[in-house]
Length: 385
Image 1: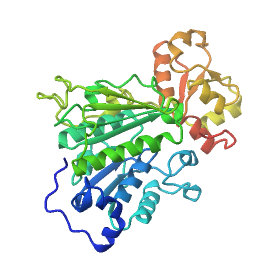
Image 2: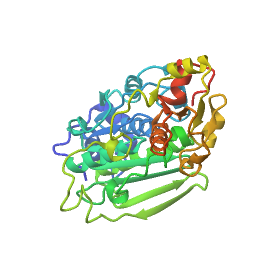
Image 3: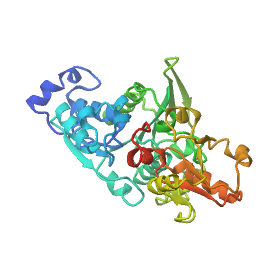
């Protein structure tokens, strides 16, 4: 299904390596040559990107690109199988490329050590036949979708949360896109991230393998790709369900008369960028908060994470009031007492501060970087997660 002209010949070494493919009628020498000539971009080398990139390298995709800018953290090791204990603190991209070269030295690996955004997405997609979305946040999912539709490329989608995962192939030219399924992002803070809600360590392998399988099918032009179909997996029941997807005739990006013809500010679209830049009077650094506490200021530390997160790791004497329940509980707070709001990284707390200030709580501050920054920079005894 992915165009390939004048397939490259296979070397003797490649014939030996891919011999189990060559005896499959639907693959054979011709199919393996298609894999060799194909190029795939994987956005994110985390939970999903790990199994996807490892299997695509192993099966012989000729040119494999990875977009990743983060470092290996100890919390990654429970599910991100590209990395090991000795890799903690190292750039994920470099570790991933080294690991993939060990898996298959016969393919070309291309590293893109930058965060994908509206300014570079279209150039990153150039030269690749298929794009795999291994991201873990809504701005990047909408960005990758829109960029793929504008570039006319298929996107192999996957997402995971706790015990559930899903996968599909979004290809605006041949079926629905991500926006047809999710026209609008959820309100900020409503859907927890994997860091906030957790994910079963084995789940990324299952969904990532499904994604890799779809990539191979698209390259070979065999089987029925998940275009117009969404596969849902429940790890607790070990069950799969399939949902039929329809193309939205009014989709702003993939319809016949699109209104979105260029990439936009996806942080703002998803409600994660404030209308006005945050000021120093709203934000407080971990160092400043530590100084305030040392001075003995009468502060209320307000935790807007989930109860499970609060139980896992918290600042001493803090009050739990999850962001989802804040609109119903905020009147219990003292308007005259300074309030420092915190979450995991500072995003949910920023929305909580914005809400509370609009409700008249003028002495409300956001802990920049959240409890994660506090643990790293102030008190390492506070558990990181």
